[in-house]
Length: 341
Image (tube, rainbow, N blue to C red; front, top):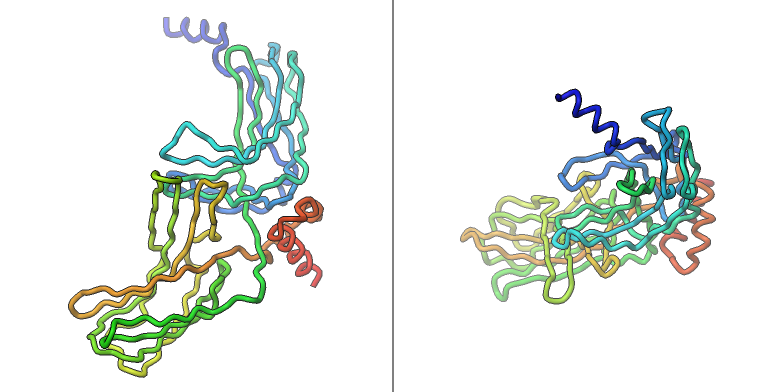
């Protein structure tokens, strides 16, 4: 009877009668980027930038070659969406493009359809966080009366920026009256993801016994609005400046290499849904285990020169569309400039 069950099922063909596959045109040459999925695993995905065309083929393969496949149309979508984990069913789409590949009818054999989304706007960076996920994907669908057949393919988007040379240093004095007075200085307030934070700490007055001192990089993810705002703080790096007591007049140098840490560009109020900000936190601990700290926000950005080789001319054309968007255009121009240099 077990055998009988299987045959009767395929007779009604509730199983998928076709398979869909999405293949990018430049799959051989396009760069891939590592990206964390929700379960914390890392995977490699095709990497795109704002303004680049997304093109390829949708292959619809019939499982039973002799059998026709009736459908209500075949389409492909390009979607950019934000999903807040505490609001699971709700996807906020900020990009949604559709191309119809075939009108309602039937397929008598396996078929391939070409698609092209020209110079697609991809305004935000792909991001997987503690409470929120921003993703881009292609979804091909064969619409059917009972059950659609569809296939999704995720891609990763990186946003590029070029920051003006005007990048003021951060200088701050911090003290506890009559017992501690220090001054610290970081060379810049904006750092690219492969940058080095160079700084100095001066001890002007030391009357408490400091036994340990460190700089932490803190990542703060903020989701939601109004009364339901969630903050998620994550210590990305701990850099020990000093073990033991400093003396008055001492100055301690800092060199903190960012390339070794997993960080994203600073994201401010993305689609009014979330933010990701980074802070340098100077922490002092005295012999009584009291902690003193001073926090300072820094801006992180992704430098455009990594893309020299893969930056296509079409992306530059695409950027012309966003005259108003300084970051996409200047990044692309810079990439092109550095390419010709």
